[in-house]
Length: 291
Image (tube, rainbow, N blue to C red; front, side, top):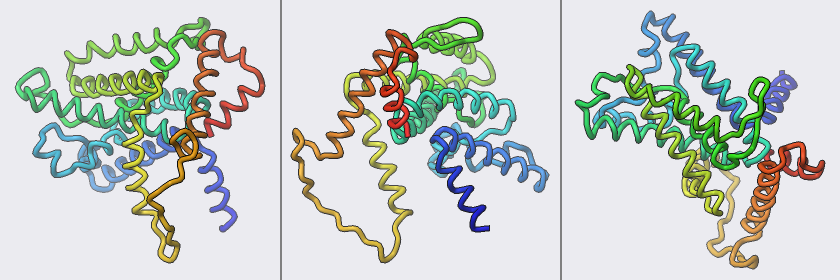
């Protein structure tokens, strides 16, 4: 049994962050399905405590839903297509960006989608969103990740069936196909998609200029996870003053900055000449950086 547990831990440890998110979404879908069958209730009611309500007063009572709605699906095909896109997007992220940046883009996309929906509904509740229900699904996070890639390396070409197409064309097509949804029963979901698009684009364009807008959110998440990873008897001394001998930065900050610069140079080369133009060393560097 110990060997089996270790094998499972090893396999989970080798998964990319987006593959772990796919597992989490699938697990929550399955739990909701079981609850609906055992409790003889509707699929929506089975996961109602996770979905994002439309009224601010209801949201205040369940603030966690600003993130949990993005891990909640009640329709199988909704789950399937979201996770399919996330899988392929995640492969690119794993090769190009570290785990924390990938998670920042995804979670901030979900949060931005939620804020866009809450703002649109509560500012004008009797408008075109008056008949919408609660929002759920990973679409805002998935779209944030996709548009992030499209904005970060717009001229990078991918194979789409038998033709090669630049990423920015794919991003533009996704947005145009989404817009008619504003006039359907899924208008609330479409608003959340737009929030994800805006976050992904803004994050990528800022990062290209050397600014990671997710760093504050990253520190917040580190502090939250740190609260739950505290172990008694394993105290760590924290020093207020860090030695900053590397151009005003710590050694770790300096190394991270240099690594990101190398990644940017390689991405620029990919955008101009394609992935196959990279040397073996450059491909290995991207792979290690993704890990």
